[in-house]
Length: 252
Image (tube, rainbow, N blue to C red; front, side):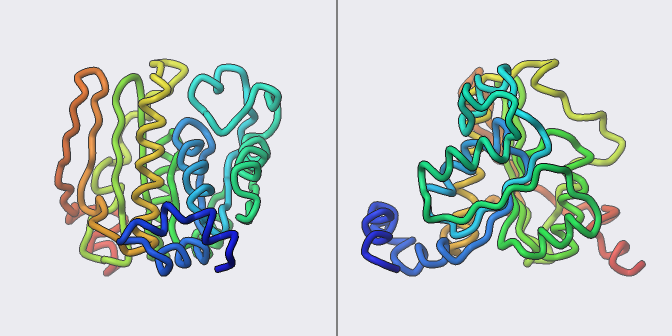
């Protein structure tokens, strides 16, 4: 770590649980963020500022005017530009030392597996069950920690699935495939700071996992109700019949 890095990350290094060793772990880390919308924007901003060495940004969408109310990694001048490129411009202005990789298409199958295998942790900031299921399955198969968040209207939720611990649940233990498709912001609305709060907490949990600091949300679901300003923390249990992580599945 050079003198400029020591100065840039000085306030973070002063956190006793982080220190120089933790900061170096962040500098050596590769984080994949899938989705550069309301969740992925604050997560990416804070992870870049924290000194993550390599950030891979995945999103096949282009920026439009309705996104700007909550997707804070983007600027009005970039309307029409791919979100990964728009976000990279902002992140580079915050921290030009980090390396940014842009993938402007959806990844599936072997391509998704190859990317996730290269990552130290994955941030799922997508907005559909189909994407979340596929990311979860790939992360479980490759034993890559996953931070999953979601938000709609004035509600949000967050969980961590650290698949290096085989005893814990996965995302499919929480939601079954028969669930209806996730409600969208365009249909139900979203208060910008709510999705921002969950995205920020995704960055917090990622940093904790990468630096081995504190207790992550592994095995728990954190639920935020901004209307009543209440937080609930629920314990998640492994589904013995889960099609992804159950022992029955492993035996097939």
